[in-house]
Image 1 (cartoon, rainbow, N blue to C red):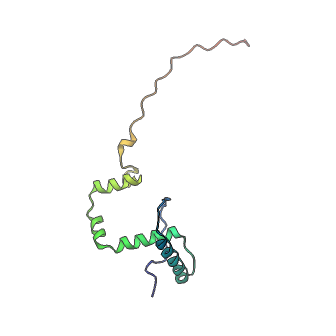
Image 2 (image 1 turned 90 degrees about the vertical axis):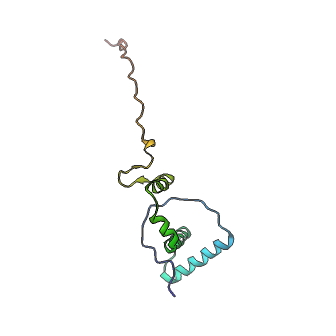
Image 3 (image 1 turned 60 degrees about the horizontal axis):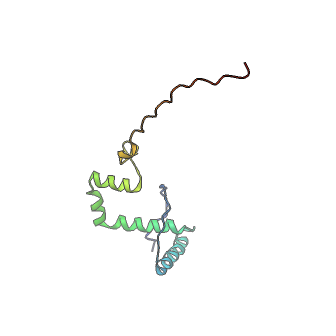
Length: 119
């Protein structure tokens, strides 16, 4: 029977996150990692495997997929803001409040140059 998690082909920006897993979960991840290597003939990093397992679960959860499709623009923007993702249409941060105009810098009054001692 083929693996439920398909061979990794997509490249997507990553960010390191820290999480705590029970020993039983870590054991299952390592077992699946060995299974993946047997199925596809190459090893896989634990982080990649966990990410693919989560994404496989999310893609197969019909209620979650329905929730995503029904998200409002405000909800989507809130997700982007929480992740620090740029808004796709403008390449600007979702929270435009972060892009406030910098205060004007006052010019210093002109000063008279010091007399040169080499003249």
